[in-house]
Image 1: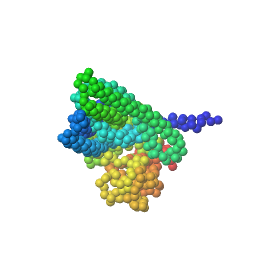
Image 2 (image 1 turned 120 degrees about the horizontal axis):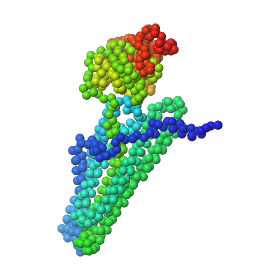
Image 3 (image 1 turned 90 degrees about the horizontal axis):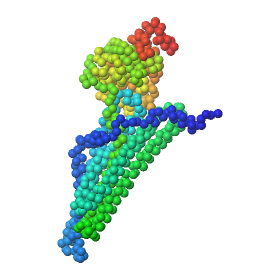
Image 4 (image 1 turned 135 degrees about the horizontal axis):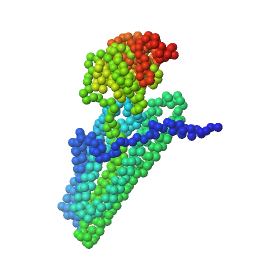
Length: 613
């Protein structure tokens, strides 16, 4: 009897699989006016152009107010009550209509130019913001990436910044423009009849309060919506990267179920936010129309009644109605733009959160450049843990003389890769120190450290481009001849020349067209081209066939000569010629000696050697 139906089994599996993708991120700092000012500060380099755009938009707004005055003049002055139009009045009317037409054309041209310019500025500013975000991501330590799915990082660089473009293109300048329009029309209405203006302001106050409350509610909903969006994106990115594994273990249906649930959660949060979002414009539109109706009703009373004071002319009533329409439109636009700004506040939180993240690996203020590197390495009482309280290495001491080849062996998870990762300063030690030629690596500049310490990992990564591009990646100024020589050194030249276009053969991201061994040889050539004084090979020959491995063994004699090197390998045949072999286990170095010396000891290395043989 089955304990679970298939649906219940899938849901149970989803509970196990959900930990990273269903976990919402929490912003450390909520959106505030300082964050808004910081966002606006990205436009400071373009303030002159922005001021010009705003002036043009204000000019356009002023032009849009003049026709109402012309209408009033025509109604009250040009058209006499007797129905007879004098010649001079007709001529004046034609002149006024011509001016009106010219103003309309000027308004269209000015609006077009300002829109094009603001669009260009907005995209340039967003590119600058995205560059700051990308630079920060390049600066952050590995711990940052270890703690979150890559998809949640990706949406911040792409979608979130793209959505900010409209803020700089439209929201910022349009809010300023329409605030001016509101003030200008309010002044005009005050000049015509101040009581109507007072009523308009009084009715607008509740609208402002409602909009403020809705913006608070919408911000909270937008945060939840953004969380579900990034959760879904993170799952998609990792699914694509792990498609082979998914197919191999027949996970398509299960992953589809997980994706469906993630999408459903996003849809629900999107609809909750939409319900609040869609209240903005209808509510603002209704209140503003009410203001216009009240104003026109008051104007009508004033034209037919003398009880409230001096009666308004028909032209004045038309002007009030026109200005109230402009006033209403401006308030509607402001509400729409404030809604858009509220929508992107959660994006701003996420983006600045990354930019403000302090890297755990920081270059010292007075970092030094290594010169004439000999390659002496010392580990002094080094203790390290990936997770606080769980030590991976404890009080490790090691001295490596210049030019020595050090092999690291031991069980999986013993800390072999950790030791070499610390030398590259991918992570910082919890306590103790690692030194190169007596200089603490924390006092060496990043550029100098990475120049002198070359690393080749087991999981090789190739970039989309040609084979030549990938070899040259470590030294962009290298000539083709130097790249080819590096490939020959690692015995990659022959297989490269057998490709359809040789070194110009294009490969996709991660080099899916190449075998594992071919990818490692290209990565090896890339490492040799950079000519580091210290070389780290972390399972670098694991995917290479036996014949090529023998060639590389011979090449070690040449390539590693006069270089300090660390080699991690499960194939013990590749490390027998090492100057020293370190057996790593129990958070430390348990055995240290040459192959012959450790064989005589008949300790852990001896057992490992004979179990493997």
